[in-house]
Amino acid sequence: MNIKLKRYPILSENIIRTVAIEEAIMECEDVKTIKFNMKNENTNYIIPRPGQFVMLWVPGVDEVPMSVSGCDINGNWSITVKNIGECTDAIFNLKRGDFIGVRGPLGNWFEIPEQKSKNIFVIGGGIGMAPLRFLTEELSKHKIPFILIQGAKVKSELMFANQFQILDKKSVDIFYCTEDGSYGSKGIPTEAFETILETYSKRLFSNAIVYTCGPEKMIYSIYEICEKWDIELHASLERIMRCGCGLCGLCVIDPLGLLVCKDGPVFKTETLKNMEDFGKFKRDFTGRKVEL
Image (cartoon, rainbow, N blue to C red; front, side, top):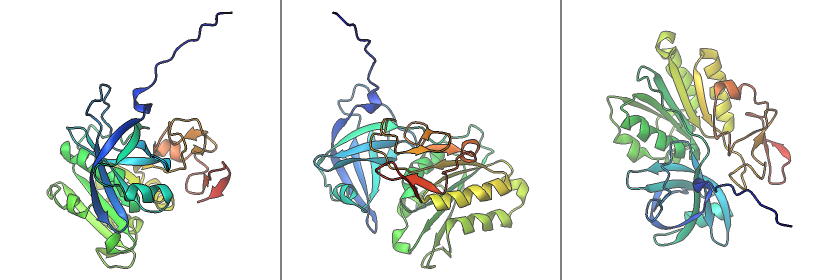
């Protein structure tokens, strides 16, 4: 019997490509930025957008999701990794000339407002600053003013300080906070955010958008503040991913059944308010729901 199988095109962003590391930069304690070129010899080159991620494969170790932390016009991409486990340790120790596999860009992205009259907040903490760095570059490129709030436990864990310092001071206000008070104000990003909101009139922020990424407990607190002040929120969430393309189901969020890899990782206020898992639960490598 002759059976004709319908052939579906393979999405070019889901094809793994082998690239060489071109540069490895130490950002702060236990954090490195790895740069590589995705445009060379790539006939189906796709430009990533802020908020998207890649599945990064280290031969002989594992494949893990990594946010894109930068991209230039020449096709040089960067990911920023914190050394916290076996695969991230392997990535952290990569050097110029080493090879990795890259699948992407995957997922959705932070939507840039067309109206420059919007009041923009970019709020992050820890390794969540990686996609936000890419976002700040895009906002600056479009000459959109914004307020940046970055938090860390101690001064040595603040990320991208040099890159942020060269941003246009006329259109960017930067607030740093550390939990021990070693740099900037003492406290956490949510406290700095509330202080700024309470310092200025509500009218000034009636047309605001908040972009955030970081620990989900922090994001949930930002969500509560945004609900109080009626501010639109765009939040990038993190979940365990084995596939990055909707097959493994480990990144599902109840009760909506949304997948962070396919429907996210960026979600807006309207969706976040209907996520029972948001700020409370995630799934482990077995698929079992556990507390954040």
